[in-house]
Image (cartoon, rainbow, N blue to C red; front, top):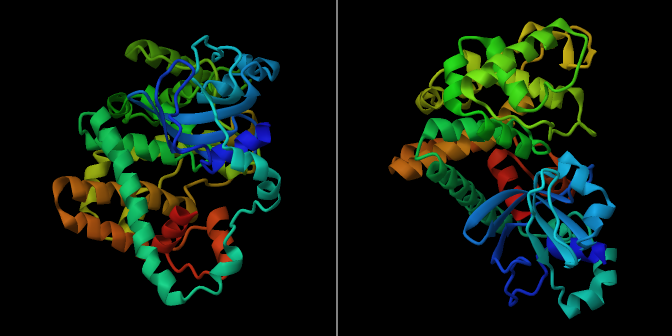
Length: 400
């Protein structure tokens, strides 16, 4: 039954005529079901769901029955604090986060036609169901389709930015800070990095930007990564500095870390990414305003070329050392940040201020950047679809 619920949720195959609502009677609108999670933790991450009049972004867990939440120990696992909706076949008990806060539940109604066909559907589920047909598609048709798909993707990203603008009273600097921090999670840790940005207001970062060590202390502390005990002088000093800053700014930090390490290469560990993020804000002031003045991807890329503090030359993580190596942001990481942060913000800013030159600059930047190298893009390449630049890779990600 649970596998059936996973499939129906993933492809939004529940009865469209049905009125989705929580067990408490609140209306539910699924904007994005999220991405399947093959690692430890909730079943789908990065979902976007409107419950009543509130838009939620986070993770979704699926079970046959509500009581499975407790059978699997999720009520005591801090990795499930990020769950915004519990999808079940049968709601037989209320559930809560480890903090005790209740979690909304949705009983998913599976259409009978899907239920009867599920064995056939599951046996034919592939990452790219149309892969056998793409190679035979008329290239002219595909080339005409790409701009439409890219427009859809930009529209969706602009909507996300507009929601942040509403939340932060149209403060573009704060929105840039939140979006940039989120994208330092590079997919698997994006939600955790966004929560970090929202727990550490931009104005506090600006006040301490003169000290790289204090920026690191605030970021690591608010990320919940200073709760362990390591026999290291740098780590102990950072704990002490964070206690001072936490008191100074009345910060509320989690007593756990939501970041994932499973199947992540050391160069992408959240610890190193936070150190790089601290170095970036230490170097840059009025960052978004500076970006608005730049005309080329190379000029913007140069703004992101920073070196984390000396400790990270011999570490990827607090708990063990590595061979000495400089650890700036790599070229592929820089390109991802430009594609997912700078481009949509430039486009949204142009739309918001009615200055189309910024929109044109954003689209030109996508054509100047190389195509992304990720699992989705590789599927299309293997199916015979040529991908020449980031604009085309973004369009194909939108199609997927």
